[in-house]
Image 1 (tube, rainbow, N blue to C red):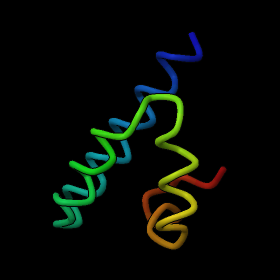
Image 2 (image 1 turned 30 degrees about the vertical axis):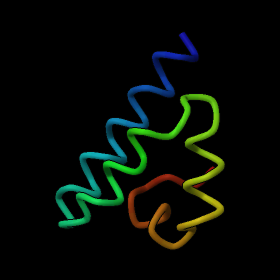
Image 3 (image 1 turned 90 degrees about the vertical axis):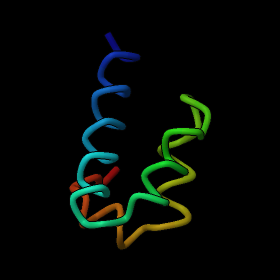
Length: 56
């Protein structure tokens, strides 16, 4: 269940980034390891993560 939730959240973040015209960042998110994409996204792009609705 947790893996499914994380995958859905990643897809939602990627979709939001694409809607914002940030396809390069969305592709970067998709190639990050499943177990590290969240922490890497939040540490690298904290303001963007909030705009995507991802506030962990």
